[in-house]
Amino acid sequence: MTKDIINCFLFEKIKELTFAEVQFDEKIVTTRILDSINLVDLTVSIEEEYGVVIQTGDVIEENVDTINRLSNFILRKLNK
Image (cartoon, rainbow, N blue to C red; front, side):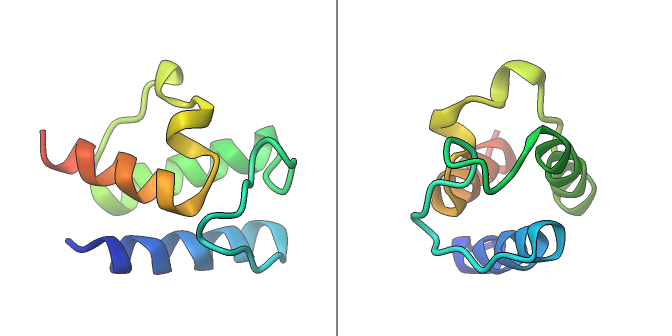
């Protein structure tokens, strides 16, 4: 699994949820592009797509506030 593939998945999923096209380093949570409901939907989609478990404590700005942060987080989960 590559970061580029994960980034594309996240970009498309965020676009589907919010109708917004965001840059990979654009803040998506602190700017409220993703609201709490959309964040839960995105988390479930990530878990289903990649077979990882995302705990509530994992959903912090350092892990989820940009597409790049999210993809790095997913890669760390996959490599455990």
